[in-house]
Image 1 (tube, rainbow, N blue to C red):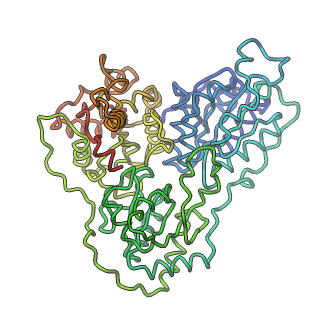
Image 2: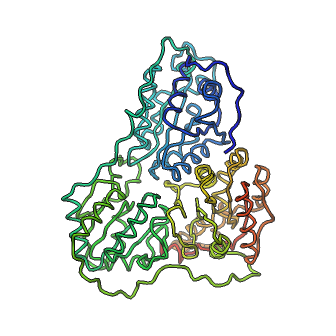
Image 3: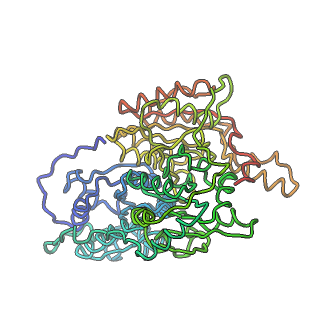
Length: 589
């Protein structure tokens, strides 16, 4: 990343309240802090630029608070550690709230600093200080952050930020929030502030499961004839990836993965079920319904998945579930999902279980597993793309597979209804997953944040998204262009929020009303938005809209070439409006 170079200041002493916060960011190892500027944190802004010299960490400017947080979210999904965020008073916090909720639901670490107009009414400057001051500002987001605080002194700021970082990075991870009063930032220090050894406040090591619980799980799995492994939220670390493969092979277990959580198991492996989706597909439902033992590794909506598979059969499998997610369930939102019936609960992160479980299983004699009629790998068998017609998402997937050749790509985002069978996942960094909260507009920011973390890794970040998703966060592209963050954005444009057209069609049909009206309040047309033109104005290289399926691969190859050279590139592909979305799709999901 090309950071903005600050004029060196002769004043490198910690003299102001905001200098303390800036110094802590540096000592905590925060590499970048993303902001949209505001007067409530002008003191901290000055400390970042003139006290720290805009180095370690560097400021990153984004044009909207929703993207500010989304960029930090995407960064954390790749880096596995927090990026800093600063939000301007109550108004900036409210603008960033949806993205904070995404980070909470996706369990990614994030350190958010806020600010408020002076709490002391006697020193508020004018009407804007009053508007930008809220009582208990953290209450706006308290239900979906790990921890929040509003310190009232520089010494308390040290404690607040150390605690915020520790909570954010302790599994289940999530965002933490510290609000700094304007006067606290701008007042001179009355005495030297001692910052303790940061290593003494490091997040705790993840707890390991009790030996007797692991032994019980191993016995049940070893005795099972038809075990199934559900892999949900999982580490991108290569060692964990290989351990999951080893576990499935040792058990002869079928594996079901989920498009929400990123690549967690090779989709070309013979033990992998149907290509991953956002919902349990009919084929995976059959695989799960046949199981006599189920190992859930961080699966998010375990109860609903089991209900789908076993409702009609009148039976249930033995269920083993490894997760610490329950520790942050608070009932405010439904991110805790339905309460699952579990035979063996293992209170540890899913990947922490792998090594001791493999060791325990190695001491068991595995009975032979019965043959199955549904044991083919889900590797794609793409045929030639038919030219001369409007593209589909399947065409995009097949063309991307062909265009990548020997390149290493990282899909930072894919559209709803993505045909995962057209593009295999063979490495934990092949795909990063969704945004957690299921809103609209996080795609560009999260893609650019992941691209920032991937820079120099040898992987090319690719964000595939629909037009509605792109338009909601398009201004994030300027950040990538300004800081020279190489990234490829591909927009599948059907000029509609078409998934919601399908929903409206379903309601109309159920009520005996005309489904032809489904488009009203959904179509993004008349005028059509010039997506490529918008991207160009924000600093991206683009090309004419791709309207023929036969032209997709060549366009993707051009885009990948440009990103390999360090460029920012966008390709707009006009797809069949109803591609991947129909009442049949809705009924299956």
